[in-house]
View 1 (cartoon, one colour):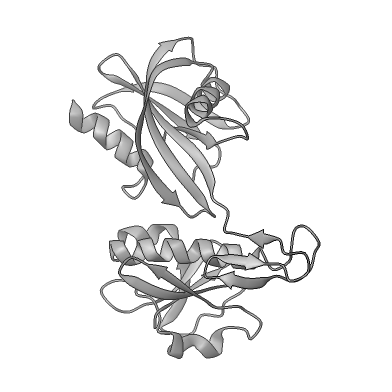
View 2: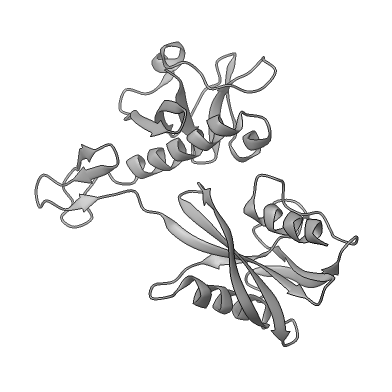
Length: 253
């Protein structure tokens, strides 16, 4: 049985030395996992995995903890998708040990549910929906932004978490208005992607520029501009729905 071991939320233990990083076999590393760490089985398409999260990891050749996100370009696509689910289960396990209602220790109820033996409160893995939107102006311009939390110098798309009581379309309009001061129209659904950082669902949309001048929300963004095709700055890697939205726009024109 393969195991997904996540370290500090950002890293994952892999077996190195082959043509691509691979997950370790549980029997090979079980002695390196602290006794108090809970290991869960995770069912995913094509793979059943074990999953856990540890605070620290001492590398033991050939097993090393590496940044999780770049593994998408290196691992088998289906295995990486299963690992994404395992990551979210590990995060949920680490953050649902006590009942939020009465504080008692929780117990596993089903594979993806816990129940408080004291008050009966049930806990399921939380998923935080967020929107991401491609905004077009005319036939040859697209709005790209550079957020303060981006690593590197690439530009991406306006994105943000959904608030209580909002529809997805209302969230799109609000985020665009807050971050850029622009008004948009013709909002259309594009697709979605599980985003395990730590437990999100990124819902993609397209929209058309309607009116306004760009005024960035300085707490969130460093820059926001309309770019022409053929003059795009560095953009997100191909694993992300942001890149799918951008590539779709480039390909259609």
